[in-house]
Length: 351
Image (cartoon, rainbow, N blue to C red; front, side, top):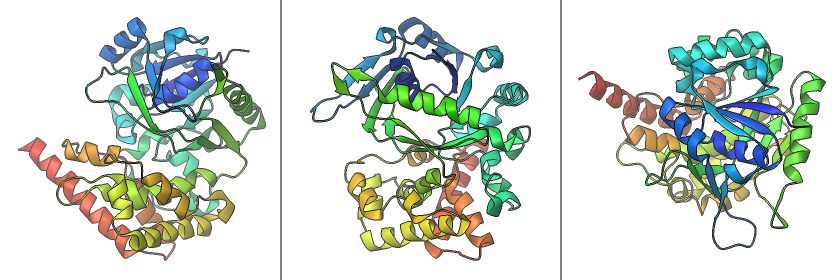
């Protein structure tokens, strides 16, 4: 049966959308008016490399069995959908039109699966050790999540690396690292049955007889998505320097021993929250993947472009680690650098 999925965010969200469309499900992307008009006219193009192929293949939404459309936030009718995917950068949800849309989604009591790096606050409240922590300072506007029931919000570890090529139109996405979306389960089993249905449908897709990378993998553990925190704190946020941004590869491999110590500290924080070591990704595997990550992270590129707000997983992990009595000097240093760069951007805007 074809499911109807609403995905907030047409950039990174188009990767999950393409996988769903290939499996015969229908997707609506929520984005700005100009991007929505482009997608409704031309569809999307996601470039992905299949196993053992030397070049990326373009996958066009207009050639897929599922139906794709795009809308502005004001035109969303949540009653049409079975599932919501949260794929925008966390600061974007603070915009007035987005806040109104989130209210409608929360009131419709739809299951929401986040593929954001920044976990929605309702998800964190499902973890007993975090439920009473003061974490709101890490969010651009924490109040946007107030109406959501925690059990209706789940989280993916957004491990696939993808970006919009700057020379291309806004409906093109290039997948640099085609790993899997690792989703934690919902509180209600009927929503988990939906997730596992989508998991199986995506897994069954073939392109010219070949398997297609980037799967949806569903786990019973709530802590599997938190494995991404070690990667973000070791690589993505350390791409931000007091000067020019550096690639993820250089951030991770420039001082491999320091990187490993940061990575293992964040793993230890997750384990204090309840994660099992089997929920996490070994540092050696991440370091190997980092060898091919030759661009600065999206957070670093945003800061270099003058953005006054970005997703602050760095600050979130700092707040958690301090409240657990597990501070880390290198994480604190990273947060200071990011704060400094964002402050400089804010001053430039207000000048």
